[in-house]
Every structure is written in structure tokens, then in C-alpha cells.
Amino acid sequence: SAVLFDFDYTLADSSRGVIECINFALGELGIPPAVPQKIRHTIGLSLTDTFLRLVGKQYAEQSGEFVRLFIQRADEVMADMTVLYGEVDAVLKQIRAHHISTGIVSTKFRYRIENIMRRENLLHHFDVIVGGEDVSNHKPDPEGLLKAVSLLKCNPEKTIYIGDNTTDAETARRAGIDFAAVLGGVTRRQEFEKFDVLGILENLSGLAGFLSWNWIKYLKRAKIVC
Image 1 (cartoon, rainbow, N blue to C red):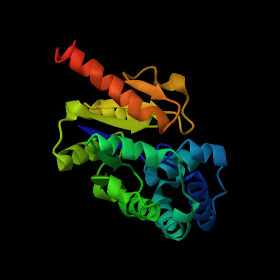
Image 2 (cartoon, rainbow, N blue to C red):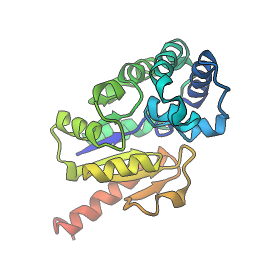
Image 3 (cartoon, rainbow, N blue to C red):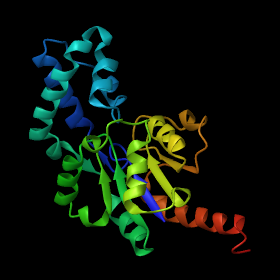
Image 4 (cartoon, rainbow, N blue to C red):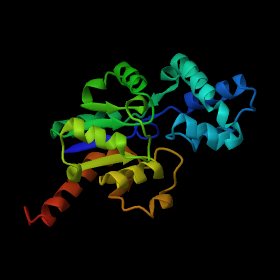
């Protein structure tokens, strides 16, 4: 009844903007810049967790200022440096044609996601967006996913979360929601093996067919069709 998406590396690539904002904030704090590839592996974490992952716990007292500086720079450049994946529009139209609710659950701020989706004329495709400012606990805590399900008034057992990394998979597991991985980021296929995933997609273009096939399997298990 509902398909929920992560944002970064699932619907869009904002890595250029993230790298720019992180290294801007680090520079303002007098900390050497981080290697871009290392930054890419933090995308999807909270800003505080990202900062500590990149520079170590010895800088923990500066995490609040890092977050402030990141947001300051992101408000200036992030939207312009974010590129939506080309297949997103068509996939959303296919899903919505089947009257399935859709939403986004991300650590990225909701207002930033809304601005990007409004720019792409896709905001109307989403029934709910839960961003980093809407929760007290970030992924892999399931608060955001459960909030989206509650707002949609949908059944968690008939909801699927689509994400690009193992944090997304763990979030879905804790929420009791099915998960499918999309290989749009830096997480490798084999890293999802320890999770009970419905499937692993190279990109979102095959999502509609994937959902249809899993719906048929669900109906067969429920003995609604044979």
C-alpha cells in the first residue's frame, strides 16, 4: 500500500554538495579536508555521526559548530549541486498509477528535499516527507519510518522501504518493514547479504516490475490467487 524511499543515492546524487559542505565546515574549524571517497561512505548518516566518523571522537566538542557550518553552506549550494536520477520521474508515475502511496524518509532536511523536488516538478508525487528535522533519533533508529507509516495510515506489513545502504536496511528491519536495496551509491551488493531483503536493484528503473512481481507472490502466499 506504500513505497517509502531514502533520498541520497536512492533518488538523487548529492555527493558533490555534501563533499563541498563538509570540507567547508572542516576548513572553518581549522581541520584538514576529508578525502571525497571517505565522505561518500558517510552519506546517509546524521551530521554529528558524519563528523565523528571523519575526524574522530577527539573533536566531539566541535560537532555542534560543524553542524551549524555545514547547514550554513548547504543552504547556499546543496540544491544546485544535487542531481536527481533520470529514471525517478517515470518510476514515480508508474507507482502512482497503481494508487500506491509514496514518501521519503531521510536524514537530509525535509525543507531541502522539498526544494529539490519542487524544482524538478515532482513534489506532488509524494504523500509524505520525513526529514532529519522531523525526528529526535536518526537512522538506523526506526522513528522516521514509523512516523511516515503513521502519517500515511498504512499497514507496515504492506509497506516497502527502498534505500541504498546497510543503515537503510537496518532501519527497515527495526521498523518491521520490508526492504529492497538499490545500488545507486557506494554500498556493494554483498554487503546486503546479512539482511533479509526483498531484492537488490541496479537502479530504480526496474522498481515497478519488481513491486508487481512481489505483490503477486504475496497474494499467492495469502492464497488470494493461484
